Image 1 (cartoon, rainbow, N blue to C red):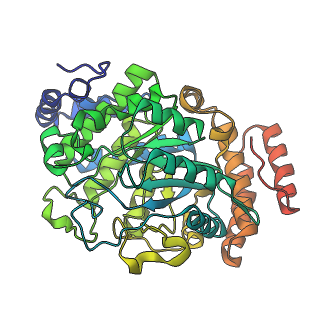
Image 2 (cartoon, rainbow, N blue to C red):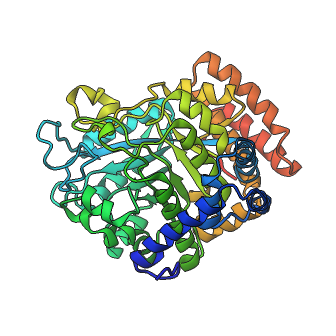
Length: 471
């Protein structure tokens, strides 16, 4: 029985409810009166339900699809302006005891190079990332209680936060590790993590169990209920995601929104981020084996509808996607992207791809400077801001500010301050020239004169060598 307030996975992600939702969507995909009313409702910036959203996803009318895209762009601007937050993944270890059939880390893969970073190697990786200009990392590790115990993750977080190199510093560490216990989530919270990220992979229980035939990840309920345990452990911000291509995308889309609704219903705080990865080629993995792949057009529509239906969430596009695809979907609601990513263990300091340890093939191989330049040329502000996390604006406090629009008073100046740091410390001459003009133009978009005046003052101090100001 479907119950968004239940703490049981099979009740807040109810299989029959999803089937009923898809049936309802098929019956109403040409009900243009209903579809138009839903688009009007979405303009109120309160989101849509999984059932309403599924109707829009099923609709194939070109004119209304264009309206969805335009609305997604406007909603993103209303909540996040023209800022795009930058981050990079850091792979600590690819040892894993699970048998996931879509991931090259699966324990039966005997020809992938297994590697685990020492704390000294982590330091070298972090310095390499700092030298690019990164301030925000997402830690990744396979599930292996012997090689990657929680103590190793905690020690690695401590190491990362301790490294100050030239003007570099990692100011926020998000963590993407396997589902764990309330006690371990409490330890991660105490270690000062930002967002806890866990991809569901698929919400279809039968498919999930087939795709995860062995290992602790086989337990669908334990995995799906992880966000509730994380929040019970005190983690304010959690990030959802499915791996599109494993199961039928309309099923996954409904399940993803149901999970967001569940978090709102139980905790009063929906997902801080939603990621939309698609399965990609990797060592020992051929994505064509999975026959549920989605086109670039459908992928764009999913991105737009996530923004429309969960308007407050941060939406993440990784370097799994090509520059062309990222260029297409960036306007459809994306608010965070990775840059210059390496998915191999030790890939930043030593270029470890030749060791064959990556999790998936990267499709966007541009440098961080090239990505920053590209974003600015499109009219976006690349932001390296971590101020909300460090000022305690997390969880329900962040959501209240975000949903009310007040967060703009912090985000716009913080984005400009961190971009200024990047331009001075790391940017190429061409990128710096474009960026300085962008900052000058964007100062006029700060509505509060006191905030604008203070921002100008701090920008001048950054020019003189000071760092790390925040609103």
